[in-house]
Image (cartoon, rainbow, N blue to C red; front, top):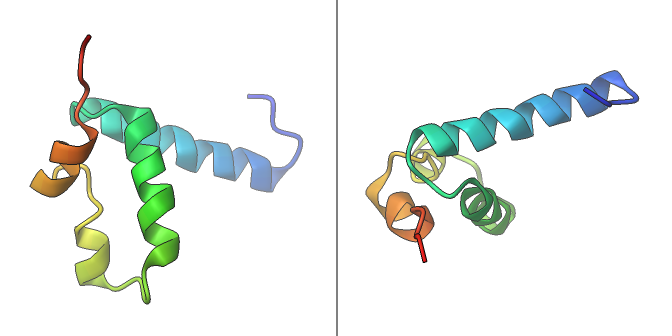
Length: 70
């Protein structure tokens, strides 16, 4: 919406897509994005098996990132 470059617009689209996917799967989107920012850079290699563990419908991810109401 307010991107100054094509790369900025692309990056915004990726982040918004991740955010909405988290919401659609009942996750707290901020927790999920933080989870990804923590895990992805620390992976030795990004393989199919490794990336499968990061999907929002995985039970481990849901246990860590589910919305909690106070």
